[in-house]
Image (cartoon, rainbow, N blue to C red):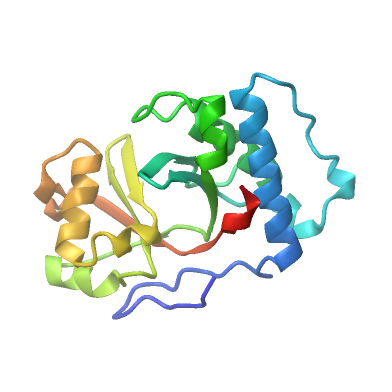
Length: 209
């Protein structure tokens, strides 16, 4: 995490402590790739032995796994609330991103060489309280915060990386609402619940695949 603090009254999004080392990042990326390749090829994959893992990999963190091809997004699945050790959450998200993202067909074996993997490990969610739309917008920091929009039992999110494609706050929130299947302006509804979080993200180098 980058240690950023939300502006104008928002609670700070807690950082991951410690940040992952280069070796831990590489292990998680390799684990995600092995998981995806085994899932796509319908081959078995043994889980790592927890006794062999360093403590940060055993911590309970929420994460997302994003698959990209040169032509664009190929899958992205994860969880907002941690419910299992990171290495297991990563494996489950990687498999789902390859096989079960409802926006895409299943990844095929001949695509594996063209796919790159990005992992995003999330900080705890910080619910926002606000009295007006300007008050809300002051608390959301582009390129730093992921945003969760919730109506009743339905939830959707954009990772902080999405700011690269949608850098303006109102547009970002409009598109987030549309992603959830709601009217673009629904984030302005007093019944809407919004939360922010930060991520520690890392991705494969081009040489990996």
